[in-house]
Image (cartoon, rainbow over all chains, first blue to last red; front, side, top):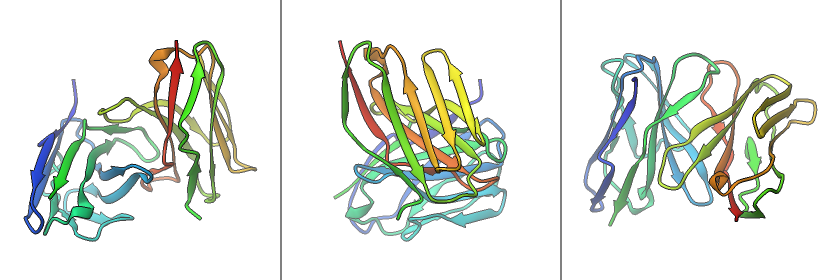
Length: 112
Length: 110
């Protein structure tokens, strides 16, 4: 079965360190998204990509970057982690405009 | 004003009750309306999908979209303890990213 895999599932890091969260999908979907989920804020869009070499900023992109070198992967990088980036991060894919989003299991990041 | 407003609850009901969850939105271009269910420490999963206006029923779940009022609803009949989860409304227009409500946390008490 096709799936979407996030790693690591849990990570603790220190302020100022660079962190990369991996997202790998076997759906062969062009559309991929990164959201963060915080109490009181729901799911907020960080970055998204509609295909190889395409990346776009979302609502809360400051301090984050993504790159899309192939269809399967969209890694999310925190260039210099801050305590405000402590959150649960979800990667998602979509096969068609207006279609269903398929989510990974989430990556829980704590920045001390 | 956020594009999508959803009362975060929490909402607690007895088993067997009818549950009504709602969202309002401001962007009249939204055409695709969805409800996701999220269990604790899991990713959201699609529960109901509606294109444009109208009703859709699937078992104990009914989704309604009223585009004239910019209002969507999810009804759960005969609620069960297994329905205890966070319910998120989401919507988009064409190929734009989904915009989510904050989610409503529901507890169904046996």
